[in-house]
Image (cartoon, rainbow, N blue to C red; front, side, top):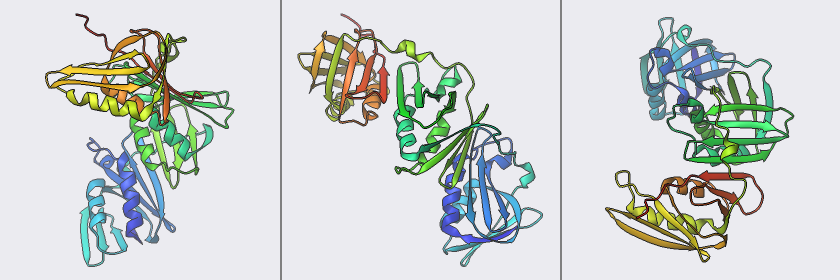
Length: 367
């Protein structure tokens, strides 16, 4: 293989593709990036057997061929090269020369024969979305994905498509996040995408209305984002029947400024750390929310003005879980609904129903 291409274009492609490369693997080729030169283009792929990212860039191909180069070393070489144009040449023994300006490296690659076949989807369900919409939906649910769980299916986000609505749901046992948007699709689907995959998808999505194309098969999903393809296995298992956890009625309704609540919770949490954990006590009374917390570091008290209707309540919450939900509301004002001291806090927009967050309370020790 012998190619000539723009160094920056190649460096950008490698930087994105290597996110799917295995950090450690019994198969050394999985720690590398597959380069495949054909006609006037260079195809690049990173794949760890669960997540894959591929792209194609323009290149002058003097000799077609394939090689797998160790991702970390290849990326560092590209980042430090001095000129705009780069030459990559490999021989039948997989020795690879990388030349740019006055700099030259010779590194050992792997045969592409050792690289696993990338997944494909035949006769899958297809849909189109705007990148900014999916970016917002993922961001508003990913925070509630379980990091470790005896049921791996909860380490992903459930996608539900029915009645021309796309709904994303994440749960971790102590909280729930749900986000909905209309979608132009007649499909009725339900599948779970790993949180790891969606975290990488977020980095590729932009804030514009550019389209992205999604294809879903029985075991895999492929997302076409700009010039990249992200493919991932889907998670197996039965997702939590989350609708049963959402209270149908409330005894207390609270309307408040989101930023003021975030700042107050953030301040009150200063006396909490990983070693000194204590619930953040919230008292909903007389059109204000009183926040308090006591640990060995000290005590904190704060108040937030709010419009409160219904029963007075005193509840304890994990401050980090509460902050995560508040920060992902992305609206100036929110509505909080309570259904008793032992029921979950429901966080909603003041109008519409495009998101819903639940945060379970912490049982308080009564003296």
